Length: 144
Image 1: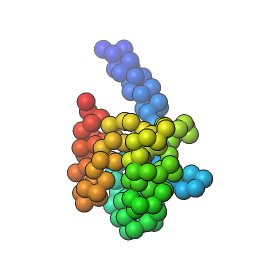
Image 2: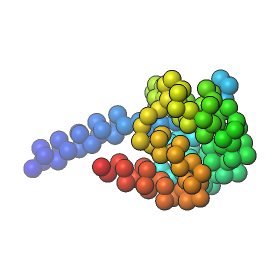
Image 3: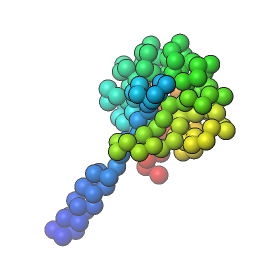
Image 4: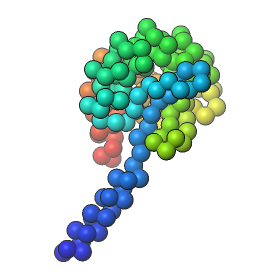
């Protein structure tokens, strides 16, 4: 029985050390941090934290602020712009490029994950209830 617990513990540790979060970077040279896509909604870096710099619809570094460079669908730096080639990059913790978060369907390197697709499709609706969408897109999906 002890061996079983040891194996489970080792597998859990191995999984937790390999799991990586996804982060958004925008701007002309992709040095502007725009938040964590799959961090806890209570994390200060999370796009799901309505009180943080990256989740607040009033913040200049939030993709949910439709009055700034990153939330205005007409701005070339916004992921919601359907013709832009300057959409934010998605990077993992190791700094590996995971694709562009972009509504531009013809952008080479555009992220095609379920999360990226839902964010782009529902970007106007999501900020009205970040908690609900976090649960739907991050928590519930990770249980599958």
